[in-house]
Length: 83
Image 1 (cartoon, rainbow, N blue to C red):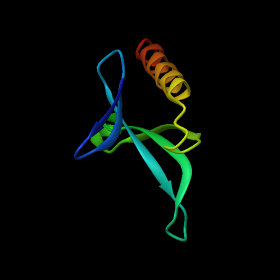
Image 2 (image 1 turned 90 degrees about the horizontal axis):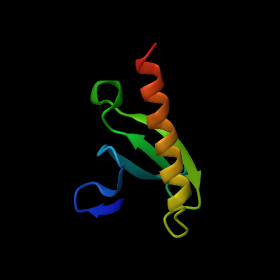
Image 3 (image 1 turned 90 degrees about the vertical axis):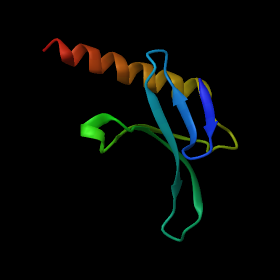
Image 4 (image 1 turned 120 degrees about the horizontal axis):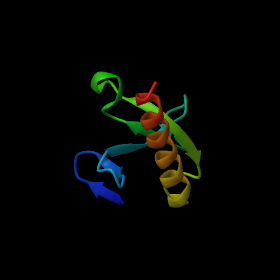
């Protein structure tokens, strides 16, 4: 589920209940780019981890692609728990 919050901007809440930040990329000249970084804010002891990124920016938000990246990421984390 995508949700806009006052403090965090756009986030995605997965079916497992985890919250992911969706952060807009900034170019070296200070302008926003069309890259959205998907960040697991609780990975690495709360430091955060970039799960993946997707092109298209917020104007052309690729909701299905973001959802698929997060689902794959969560499946991989579950698999690694068993090793």
